[in-house]
Length: 146
Length: 138
Image 1 (cartoon, rainbow over the protein chains, first blue to last red):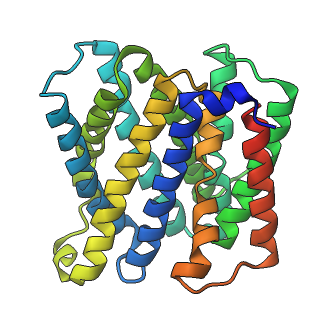
Image 2: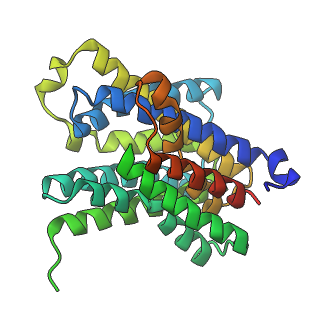
């Protein structure tokens, strides 16, 4: 069971908030893509992220940390997400099997885990490793069935 | 061995999005979750010229365009929550797989909103996802 410590940890609740928000994002994308092609959705959706960034900027009264490294990592984050998106659409256009591409790409967190363990030296318990296995199965099932 | 082009594209997706999970953790090691989101959006905007689909953007119904824009709002909120999770001590190796389970929400909500029913395979997915959440949070 999730330990009491986890249920008290803020990162856990933030993660759940992320799951709920991204669930809404995926749901709305689904509704929009009845008419709009996926790559155009990506273009339009980006403009939807701007008001959130603007609101946070306003909330912070335009005060930003001056960390070159932090800014570099965060901007790279956006650029690399976008490059991933472009490659995703390119894979479909190159005639790949939709289910295979979607399932394979959705397993990206497993790459993150591998990098976090080797580069950031994060350690997982064996229960968490089993959890990863279940997550991988769930992710593949969702990617081919939703 | 010859591999088709789509395979390489899919590999680029996997690696790019996988590295993104690492960069999320690295950025919150230096700046706040809020700043990370702001600079993330800057990164998104850099690529907009490559995604510009042409004038047909203006031809879609207001309804569909609204869904698309609103989806962006929720994507950004989710990204902020993810940064906040990492900033408040969440490990990249736990938060990344945990948050990737978001399709769980669609499967659970689709019967209500889209009037679609949950099939056996999706049901199995829901069970696996819930077990994953419990085990990853130990």
